[in-house]
Structure formats: C-alpha cells, structure tokens
Image 1 (cartoon, rainbow, N blue to C red):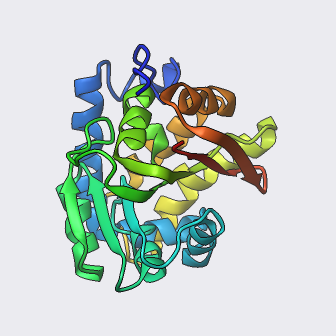
Image 2: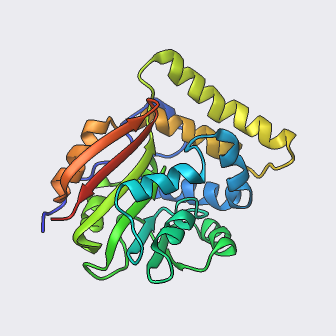
Length: 252
C-alpha cells in the first residue's frame, strides 16, 4: 500500500487563520469546541446558507457517484447527519452505515434522526479494520482535516477493492466579487437570519471560521494530487455553479 507523504494540511498558510490556532492540537481543540457548542442549532443555520442545495442535492451526488442499495457506507465528518441520512436511505435495510465524527455533540444530534453506527474519531485515524466499506462520503468538511495524506491513506485502507470515495466541498469562487459575496453571506447574513428567526445556536464564530477556511483552502489540483499519492485511481473533480466541488476516486 502506498505510504503517506509528509503532512499536508487542507488549509494553506493564511493570516486569516492566525486568530484561531497555531498548532494541530489547537486546531482540534478549537473545532471540537465550536462544533459541540453549535450542534443543537447547526441544521437550522446550515439550511439558511442554502449551500449544498439541500438534501436532494446530497442524495443526487451520492447516487450519481455510485452509492447503491446493499452497500456499506462510511460517512466521514458526519456531523449531524446531513449526508448520512440520505446515504442511509440509499443503501436501505440490506446495507450498513457508519458515521464518523470527532464531535460528540454533533453525533448526539445525528442519533436523534436515525439509528446508525457512530464512531467518535478523526479522518486521519479511522478505527476500522482494512477493506471494510464500499463507499466513503465526506460532506463539506475537508477543510477541517489536519493531514490530507493520512486521511486519504486511511480512506484507501478501509475501502474494499473497487470501493469509491466522494468528497463534497465548497470551493473558493474564482472572481474576487464572488468571494466577497460568499464570505459576507456566510459570516454576516446567516448568523443574522438565525437570530431573527429565533433559531440561533452559537454559530456565529463557527460560520466566520467556515468563511475563513474557504479562503484558505488548498487549490483543487493539490487535493487531487493527494488522492493520487494515496493510491486512488480514476481521480476526478467536478464543479457546479463555480462553488460546489466533488472529488472522487476508486480503490484499485
């Protein structure tokens, strides 16, 4: 199996990240605290962003990229289950779903929606034996991964031969005006709407962090290269509306 290369964060060095953390330990501590705190109101706030285009879009992406009835699905960084739930519906009663996330608060919200196996862990160290799953999904969380090489090596390890990975992500718009508009929407409009509709959990800092991580995210070519280095074949990236990306690959 291909050995992981030197550590590659999903975020490139960027001054916007300086106020948040200065080490990997600090990143993990900060993000877990933010996600735990925001968990009860996360779904409401996410729905206000209109990013990801809702459950229908997530389900369509999973089906289009090969998730089917009877498969074993591992949803990494599952959060409150926004990808897990449509994935569970697709694999059906004959399938199996595992939801992995480092935030106990987010997993607690997921378990209120659906009964699946939950795993409290990080993408870089998945506590499963080799060749256990047919499909790995990850929804809008790649920017929170501290080491892409370790995470992708783990994805390859736990997939069965022929298994597939599908990573949904929000990318940085190409034009400056579009980047400014997206940042304003995520960091200002969404928290305001959440408060006005009385559905506010403590999401303001989390959504500010979201916006900054979009700006600091690695370019798509570097993510594709990391998938190839891990040993994935048929690596590809598609983009919708200039914002929504799907990184895909197969285990040989």
